[in-house]
Length: 374
Length: 144
Image (cartoon, rainbow over all chains, first blue to last red; front, top):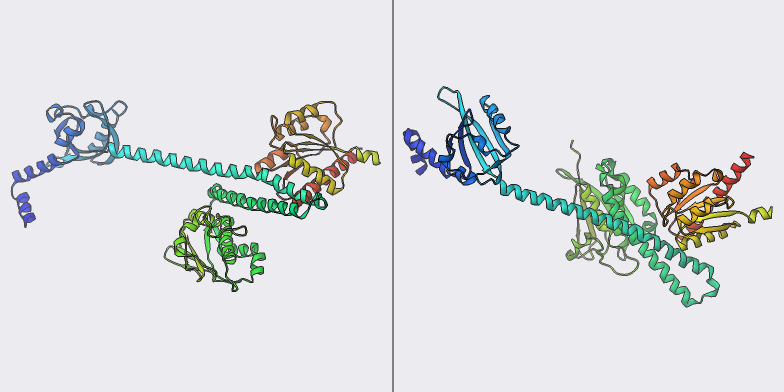
């Protein structure tokens, strides 16, 4: 009802209309200014007073160029030239100087004003103070850069540390093996057992370091462009790498139809190898059955590796994808990097990975890869 | 003939004690009668190579060495006409393609990444040394 009343007012009387428009201009948070084609200020609202510090009396009749900081003087004639041609300047981000000398980040929208005959006689200008927004953006960018740098440093550190740790480790394992061989007849059973422990621990350490290196190489590889590859070939390659443990466990593999995807072949082989390898490793008493398939969804392929193994309690469904997270202790189990590496690979390919499982009910690992735009 | 065989000498620059032991074990396993002259330091090795010592049958260089690295030693060897016919192998823990390329460009005859296990080391380094010494013989014969 009230709206109707207002509309009637707007249409009804020219005076009322002007009063209403004037009150909108005055109550605006943005500076609303008008100037003639010479750049002389003809109106100046309250927000303009607040933002730039000049009162209406001080500004009316003055050149708008008063607000341009050194180095920005050329902008104003350029804007006026646009206006004279009837063009509008939209959300132009620049810097203006307030009366107290403070520099402000502003976003300007300048439009031509015409007289009753359609001639361009000046410009209206809306200036929004975006200083705080700019500052927040700057802080955010600086923090993101800092974070990226510290991540890169950490990754470089992990790579170097792992690489350099290999050296002395190679010495430890080769020397203990040599000790075992060369002095076999002179050592008693106890000594042999201790050496066997050294060799075994060194082997475990080698696997760990190898996995850390693989993990950090995935980052270094992220500059390699993704190409069209067959996910079926990746699975076959992975299965071939796992031939020994697959045969030993008597695993039955059911491989469905698998699509071509945009990917890094080495990465995808590693991904399938880790997931299928886990299905074999975490089997229960019965013969492992592993089903690998892919389903097309809207924009993604959903790959699934389903097994009939020991399963994983829901409480662990998230943490298993973290680095060095293991649910099984002892020497024969994993290094805790395999699934972290899987997540890294999937994320690098623009997908996500998760698990659906209950203890004793097997586990189904699923991950998505973007479908090629048809 | 026997005299000549026992006089075969290989210069090794490697600061890793276990690796030197592994090289010795490799020679023993391969049944090669070779005398090793070992330098755990690049500068000491350079000093020896610049002296009037007779040229060895082959040179094995690690890349990561104190004071003077393997690349610098390799440059020095290849700039010295006395070592023109001496085969040089880079024996390193590096598996970087860039290191391999640089080594070969500087004139190394072989680039061997030290294998991680004892048996692999004995195999790989054993056959590499065989090949180096064979190369030496072939070259010398050809020159004669």
